[in-house]
Amino acid sequence: MQPDLIKCLKDLSRSEPAEQAKSLPSFAYQSSEMDVIDRSAVLQPSWQLAAHLSQLQQTGDYVVHQLADQPILVVNTGDGIQGFYNVCRHRAGPLALKNGHAKTLMCKYHGWNYHLDGRLKSAPEMQTTQGFDVSQYRLPKIKTTVWQGLVFVALNDNVPSMSALTAGITEQLLPIDLATMKFHRRDEFVLQCNWKIYVENYLEGYHLPHVHPGLNQLLDYKSYRTELSQWHSYQYSPLEQSSGFYGEGQAHYYFLYPNTMLNVLPNRLQTNQVLPLPNNQCRVVFDYYYPDVAGIEQLITQDQQFSDEIQDEDVGICEAIQLGMNSGSYQPGPLCHKREAGVHHFQELLRDAYRQAITTHS
Image (cartoon, rainbow, N blue to C red; front, side, top):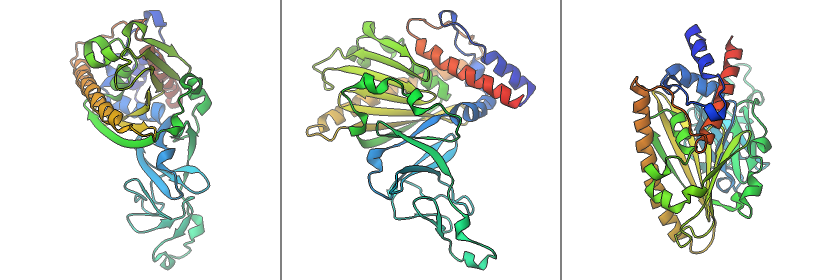
């Protein structure tokens, strides 16, 4: 790690008390070096949302995903749900290109064929290679767990426990059980902004009256609250429009560090995952889940229209913020202690990750 980068990381990693906190400097949202640090020090040592059990109901069902530049395959092996790298042990070909179902996992490059548990079954014409033995090859497993029907994977073992990451959420959501939801569709967006800008926009309701007029009417801004836990933050508000298409209840917005969101409204779960791309871009993955009940079709249609409206508003403001970060005129401003506690919480977790990165590379 270059000395200048270490100095910048040290500047970034200085903790600040919540009542006096300022936002991160523009360097954190611009630098290609920071992009590398974020991937290795923040995203890889974390739980990453990869699938939902409703997508993996039968033995042989699989889901493909890409996390922090790593191609992932999650499989119902018949003995449980297991994540693998979607990388053949021969010459790195993909085992699957899209979600599907199969009795075995066959590489799309040269046809090496694996059992669902990752053991190599056969390899065309490799008997001509001296000493080749199929029993010596298998797909590396990825740490995998399931919570509330959501399948998470971890790219290394240095992660908090899932119980610590989600502490208290199950109880707060009762009587809602996310495991009963069924996957409906996926939307993906590529934004011209650093991934942290999108996350921080999610973490506060301060912008609701100014950016989201429709959402601001749905939620009770005066009652909008944020609660902090060790590894997640929770924003919530009662729904003001009980006669609206969501009906009565409460809006629950959970952020699971470092890049996963759970948006829970009556009869709807929406998950968001924010993934960094080069050149200060990010990919935001929206997955929608609904209960398998009669008459849900109208809610699904209205929910999609409303969600698209909110996302368009978020895209516009986040991309404008990136331009502001790039302008050279920005200096870190003070955070609103009442409304931006979630932003400060996220930035403190980042600072801790950056301190660990300095220690690792010193």
